[in-house]
Length: 522
Image (cartoon, rainbow, N blue to C red; front, side, top):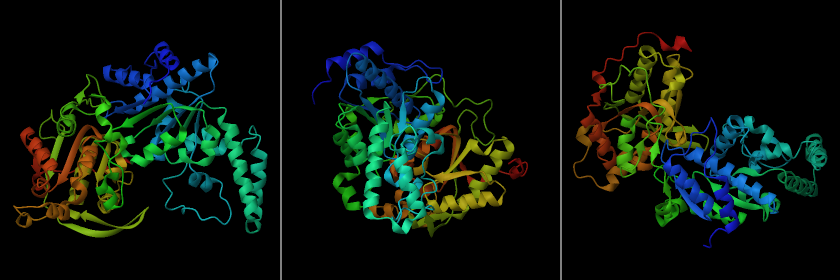
């Protein structure tokens, strides 16, 4: 790959490698190195383990790239764009919303472009089938971004095509059965022209990797995109990453992610075995700048993930989000906010209804009951609020069962989700239910991969385990069957680590009597 032109390298040196703001901490050494490399290279990678400021680093890059583009325009250059994209609407919305709300004075002229399916939900075309509203209840355009969402902006009176779009939409509403194919084609062309006209006003576009491939977007931005930032690149398949790089013809590409957390989701096992589950980010990970200082987790929480997943390279900053006035009463050691509650429950296989349809999932009643006891204890003894604690499991059926059990106790606001959906989030405390369980006499001494796959399933996925262990700022409580879990090498290492620290306890030996009924507090 050829080097970046001297003009952009010079402008990068002129603007510097940091953004001064009360809402954004100054760069540490590795963040500065990552930003400097990104600004001066045509292709670069930034690996950001949990809590290392990966997202903030990406935001600073957006601002700095835009400053370079503005200076280049002042010197007679063309209007160039920054595109910030990711594999999901959630990840893109998070960044766009934070910049819009928290740093409005520093925020460039940004626009949020949703995909066609999202736009069609808001402005449906007659006689077209769309994803039903139930399956999309959590996948709608973010209302906080309505004023910068492209599908709304092109319908504002300032856009020269707004009146034409309004005319078509009135016709669609009043006479849906009389709409000809030709009318729909004209309507789509008007949307495309309105998009081209509207995008001239903005400097930074937020969209998903899929939306970056839409013909109307590519027509509107042809030859205008200079920088492309792909966030959560470790979760993107190679085609999902390569396609926007090629389609946008960006001169500078930055991949931001962490291949040690969630991988791309590949439904076809054969495709996964042939390598599709390995992201482009992972293939080039050796050349990434590694953000080595985390500010989220208590140092004791960070110890195991650092050793197990990052070869001991992840260290804890001097000041972080984990400080507490006094330790929880549930800890065996006040200075170690970790606990593994061993319980030999019985798992059952259930069919649960999810957004993707009915799925086979697993639940464990004994673990559900113990999660509720721990939750009630924390709420009553330590006077926590419901949003201080995140309850997680890797199984939808277990999440549904825990949520239902907590509601029956009056804890209607409790936060219970799967481990996969929690990536990118952080909470003060995490309670995790492992679910999988077998009686000790059924655990074979000479285990092969087939036995482990059958009896442990995807709870042995090291990427998901990493996500589970790195969401908590101040403490984590794991509930599971240690006898079965330690059949997996990652869980075995964790159980050994917790044992050395003196953080193992038999669930039946715990006194978790609540002081009061916590439900009355909500």
